[in-house]
Image (cartoon, rainbow, N blue to C red; front, side, top):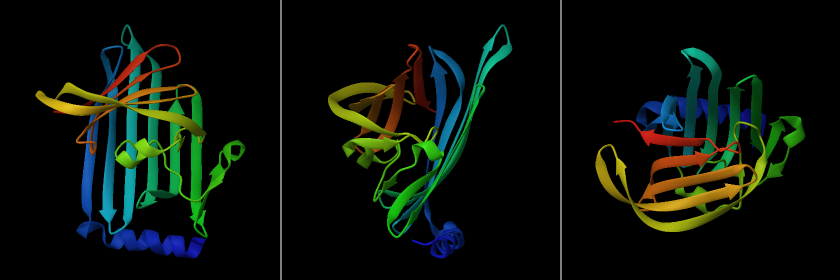
Length: 210
């Protein structure tokens, strides 16, 4: 897809947005049991195309003084299960990140950051909202731009509480370099929860809002 056609596609999706199907996931985010912020995902479906906006805001305080802030926005366009464009910006403490890539002639190219540049016909991000992610061996980190090898395992069924309701969920682990995630889905389709252990052993939990 060249730049001119890509821009036309964006306009087309915008034009039909009112008639598109929309899905949302809104999570409270906890670190070591304490609420630190929120992360929302808004997905608009228009035929084979999906438009995702992801926004996260965290803040950690000590004696009511902010000692850490995290702000992240990612704008992604998908053709079925293939990422065709991404623009993201992240403030992670004192670190700032920008990620940018798009598809040309059916090949996705990550262009920023330049040191992480790669080309791939049909990459996927850590797109928890799409269960097809669970079948991948490499995933794009939309914060850093790193294209990471991962191992994903089905851990079987587990009963969990979601919005005060007990649900028999399918549990998965996602591991890789500096990656230690656990995900839960209803009927292998509907994303319900995320937990992560950071490299410095903090425990992060995403809980669907009431």
